Length: 287
Image (tube, rainbow, N blue to C red):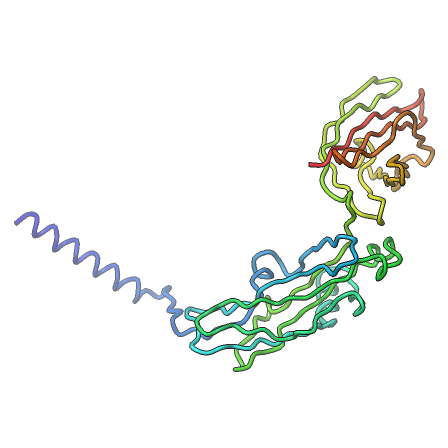
């Protein structure tokens, strides 16, 4: 009898909870919600996608998906229409104080402006090509400084489904990336003429300037705006060029080279200051 009562009580509680969940004023029934087309990477990671392009003659392929959002898939195919829309960049720049510029049409190929979400499916791919060879981009420094981006927008569908106002577009920010571009572990010693040596041990990002040059923090003074460009010469020697707030009279001494086998920079440089030279012996090794 006791077990029977316990079962009845549990069943009553369960039914009561189910009823409360459905009847509660905060319960929202999404089963009748209309489907919406969006770009999922924009929703998950933001509408701006930063894409580093290798400097190469062959086209660089790029793809993303459009998505059918909603409680259920559909019983018929949905054709999604897309377009390059510079007004997306204009609106984004105004809202976010950025200065993206439209990528010139000669530097991309976007010939298929439709994709199809198959019946019973949610995703469909969108593909395009970018051109990043030296035959197309003759001024690599100017290209990276231009802050180019490609704005793509979903313009509609074959059966007039709603398009997300927040995530119905995607901006692809494009920068050139040479073979030296990447993350490096920096180790070494900064020797001050008065205070003595201190260890350098930090992670540095080397960013493409042109085919043979990258830019990164100068010694361990990056937080003070000190930068340096490292140009790898034909014989793998390295030329250091001070930038930003770095001392323009910086000179190199000893070994300054790049080892392509280990992807390692060996650097020795110094600059004059009160009390004598500040001497930096540094190794940058690709991670």
